[in-house]
Image (tube, rainbow, N blue to C red; front, side, top):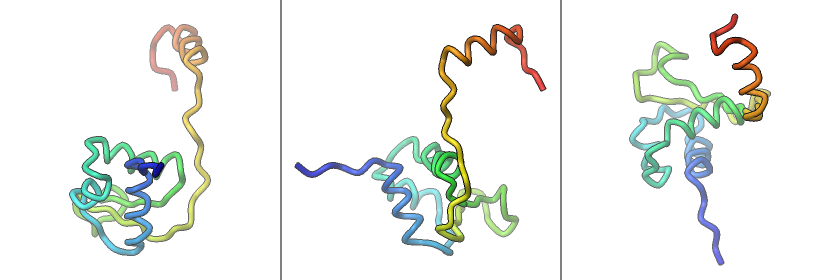
Length: 100
């Protein structure tokens, strides 16, 4: 039985095969297998997996809908792992208000 790759894995493979090249959002979505949530997967790769995927917010020479993976070197990253119990406790403790 062959196992189908998930959209995040497909996107990662696409970026790794295009290191140093500017890629367009439509190409990323196509590489993901047409996933609607492709942008979320890119954010997960950046924030949770540590891949340095740049966008127009990071570099002035990139246009909106353009992305660039400069290197396969990963930065330290941390998973989202706050339990629902801890989240509820903190929200209640803070009166359901934003805290700095």
